[in-house]
Length: 173
Image (cartoon, rainbow, N blue to C red; front, side, top):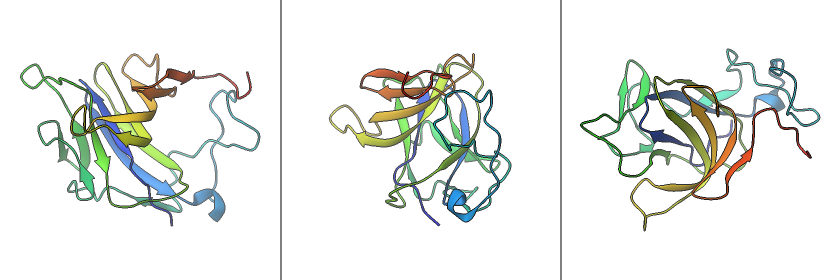
């Protein structure tokens, strides 16, 4: 099984919970789900079945942040869930990330289960740390997640070019 390089979750003054898992499921022949809406996928790309974890390896033990690195003022584990939370009493000065540091994979597939109760967030991948800006600050690709579901599923480049692919845009358009 493959492991993930440095998956990180972005916290934008929101509650984000997720379990991140890396995989070689497609090579192992795991059943695949149907694309939602069918648009925006390249040839031969199938949606991952959200309830099928065959061939996936969890990078969260369900109890601790072992293997993860983030500001403890914003990140914790409760009820087998990673919680990222900012409050009026603990506002963010800059986007902060929870960074997975327990491996260096090459290729991976990622499944994320999340809940969000306000504003927006996302999951960074293939990102670069920016220590000159702040600890736990990253630049790179982000799978966007937002409470209004306006940006969820879009590809955003944090501290870069901004939105790179909108949901429902086809490759090559």
